[in-house]
Length: 348
Image (cartoon, rainbow, N blue to C red; front, side):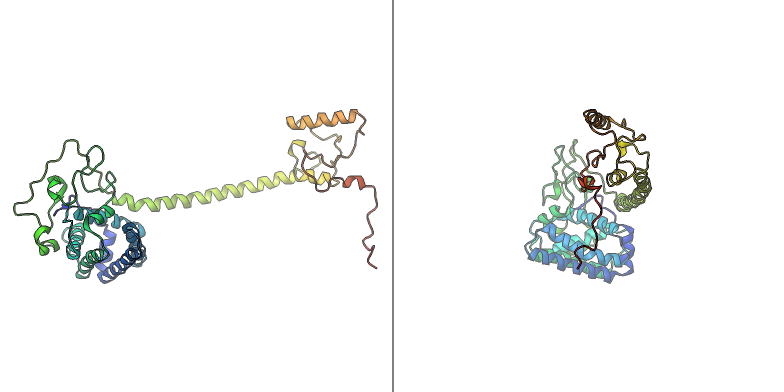
């Protein structure tokens, strides 16, 4: 079998956290695998199982000082590295072999000269065994773990149609400059057999002239993207709130001005309600009413003039002279000349 080349580099934030507390990281992986197996046992698919694993590990890693962005980026990288190895590994690899792939992949992602702590190595081996115990086969797991062809980080070359040119389980089909052997002193070497290239190496297929390689994962961009988006949201909100706060006094001032004695009939608002209930401008013939605010006002004015020409009083009270608004007190003006009822009437 072979590993992708180049391997993505583990974010330094993860490296530092694991070095500071490898036991906690190993425990996080253990709890994550328990969630993975539980999801698979409940009939979930592999994608849901990996999501359950991440949901459990994420808060633990955050307690270790790892940001959600770095954790997500590391998950994508591990998926590409381990998935690429399993894609080229034996189709019938068992839990121990899958654990060896995980262990060597994570080790190859660490900065040069960095040794993997023993608890982390054990957790990687347990992850492979846990996946096998949950019924996951290497090539199926590879397809779930790797990004889709064409996405950043997809570890193999593709043809112009976007199809991977390396069939599952055929490391010799991977061009030399797109793959590399497992480390000679790693976990796969301890497994031996099909887990290591044959003596003299594979007869690798050449890279097709029209092959397309996806761009590598830009971990810095992936980690920076989320805070940048949140910052933009935070910056936008105060601006929006300020606009709302600035707008409200203007609106309220306009509403308060509407009830003044010289209001324009095109701006009927609370003032119109006041007029209908007996305000100083309820007389539609008043000298200060502006009837030419817009076409609607002009039309109403013409209709009123016509009505007055037909015998209407020049200062007739119009309880609904508020641009046609429904007046809950319509008809009350007819009773305006009646005395108010005695509030004590009927009380004994």
